Image 1 (cartoon, rainbow, N blue to C red):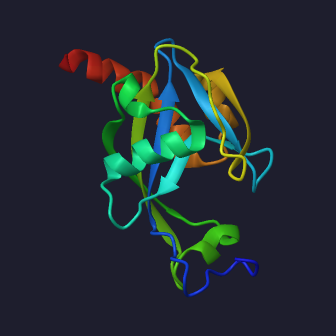
Image 2 (image 1 turned 135 degrees about the horizontal axis):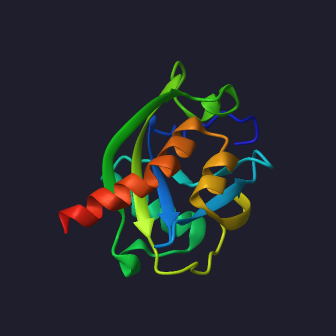
Length: 162
């Protein structure tokens, strides 16, 4: 993909993605610095493949981007929350011509402690665990920021259901 446009043999990304907020019980949140947008931090994100559920997408993206196996930590949790946003112009070439918006499904993954992270070097430069308020402030994406800000309420709601 030297020209930035997928060849006929390559597939366009689906405009359907997941955002996975990985956190510890004391609400330290894992953020990743994008390799293609240095200085910009985010949670795990990624587009759904044709043949997988959104839960599978979330678990796959966590494994690909961090090396963390979600099933070993109780699995990803679907917040039943979606965001629709305009795709940054710099990334629209990854989608079918004319695609301008993406629908993002929000998930979380609770880990017992700041687990080791193995980055996908083509995707991310570095990682850090921050208190949730600091993590939210560092995100370049409004939807990521809002998900992290909602994390305490999501955890409280989940605890009441148990």
